[in-house]
Length: 448
Length: 186
Image 1 (tube, rainbow over the protein chains, first blue to last red):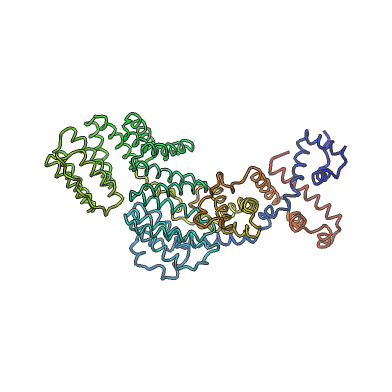
Image 2 (image 1 turned 30 degrees about the vertical axis):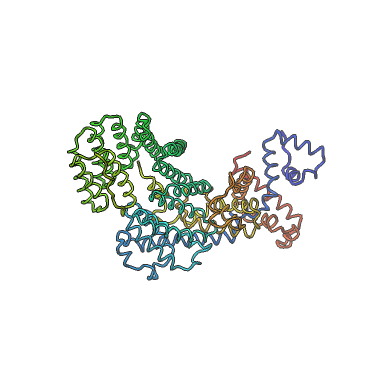
């Protein structure tokens, strides 16, 4: 097949009416059959217009925006490298950071130091909230001391907002909710200074929802968590969207809306399955197991727990695996298999205790007490409560939980302990886990 | 039950935002070159923002992104959401807090198939221009972007308009060859 000259194809592509009608028909017929000429024609047809677009040239010819942003990116990388070196000796010594007044020392006054301190606060904010607070405070002090125009596009506000977020989370874990709200308000104010504040504001919403959840303010918590979920959907951040969705499920669960919780946890499960994400599959199955168990659907609950356990044995983390084993033991307890349930519950309590997860160990012990009460073995409950009392004391957790455990011990010794008493203490311990300052109030005396 | 509060706090996945330096500039540059054009077009075409202002918004979106790049899970939707956010804020349709997400479903900033095809085509063209040689690149740039006439170019390079036309044709031919090489088409 004889090809059409490229010069003619170019001529035709730029202006088809410039060639005679007869020739035009010939070209059209030819390029319909000839891939070589069709490629050339398609190229010429779009090139004329596309080559006039300045964006096409940016990769090769550069632009003021590109140059400015790349200089900025290089500066960020350089600052981060220097800050990592500078802060290395301080990262394992939060007390030194607290005393050093970093923001008064010129060498620490840059965005790289703030980013590193923020990263440290993020890493510690759940496990070591006091240390996280120290790092977040140092980050805030430096970020606030830096001029507003430290970076282009007011990007310093991103660092300030993030530092206030970490502070808020640490305060939430410590149960200082009023301070957490204040930190969140400051984080929000900082993020609002940015041209595109959605990412920061979504994070603030998610944390704020958590604070309301911890305070058992379920309606507010869910409305805000939903807002965060929509914001993350808008930003295409499915992982964080799932965090918001999972929180919503947890809120429904705590509010005893089990059907609502199941709908939401199933969405998380669907996401986990569609993305082959074992973590989300395991978490949602565990949560669904708890919902079904509370609904009395013990067969379904057991099925969900067993599936979750198989995954968690493989991928961890240990605390979630133990939680699932605890769920299975509760199913057995509800099914009336008290001896087997108690054996498994003792294993779960011991594992929690060994990992220092003291409140969950106490909550498992309450389930053991339920089983022992059903078997009419109240003397064992006295020993169990005394033991948990010692565990809390040894862990330095001198909270209202001690009063609650002492109450169980006394009631068991007096032979007046009822399942309702255990439930009252259970509700208290779950709340006290998030609000350490909470005081235990003995349930009203009933005719026993 | 596992405390979902902790799930919320674990919003940033382990490892992200950890105490590692920000991504090196070369990664930032690639992200910028991959998406800047798309963001400009979204701001200009979907939100009718003037080109100069759109440029400024794109700059600010990237400036914020670079500050927390390590914690962004999905770059493209993040940047599209961010330019939507910035454009709506610019247009004062809503204040910053209300700009958290748009009320439209799907979001009006999400590029349609036509725009995505155009972006892909132009990215290909852009990479192709790297392979046509600097003289051709300069000539094509002057003609297509600067809008210089063949006479003006001829004057600048001490040639004739006819010769410039021949050069242009040869450069387009080179561009076509580079296009074939990159796109793997015949």
